[in-house]
Image (cartoon, rainbow, N blue to C red; front, side, top):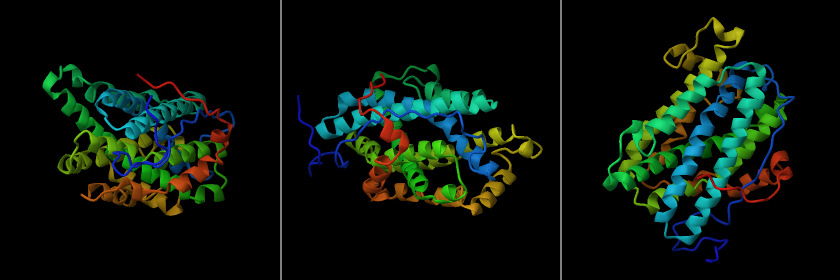
Length: 316
């Protein structure tokens, strides 16, 4: 069996220092209020939508990465990918648990939002999109195309991970510690493995031009899906129901911009601006975060500290 080096080799396709660690975390949602940021219902709902966006997508990441493994010729990158799969599977399970044990327990209707995400990843972006058989000659190209989508999304999750690690406003107002730990544990692991998706995309031949055009689709799509789902949550709250918020209405975006002044959400334009580095030909995910800062949080995270350091079963 090949020995995996703890430090990346100069000739390696991997830019991840050290070995990624899958952490089998658990969260107890019994005491978490729906308005988990006190006095901030808009921000609470907006961030809660993350729980519905992520599970279907992250399980899809895992399935695609298992399909990509046979094409990987670099030992360190292969190990990165295997650990990435285990981390992402745990992210999906943790957010799925939040849907079942937290949001539904508070009477939130979640099926509408989760079904949109399931359709996107299980039908539109499936191996045979919308049931149309992919020609054998195009199978790898379709795989690499979708790996490019993952690379773009992983840049977004990295910058949001930085935001979660750095935002002290939530602590200042006494935000729920369990949901904060979920966000920061997940965000820290996104920063920790920030290079893997981009390394794999390049290793399998993904180029700049296709990455550029993919980004122009992925960035607005993700922000739009997040806003649409958040509006659906808010419309279930009597305090927002009369506003009939929608991703298609300017007042949703204006309200988001206004609410961001409190420091509990990034401004929509700032969130979009954070994606610009990915459009550069010189993009380097290593520069987009600090592994030391991520590990510093993971070493103190209540959920991560309580987790048994046992490998998770890769998703097939």
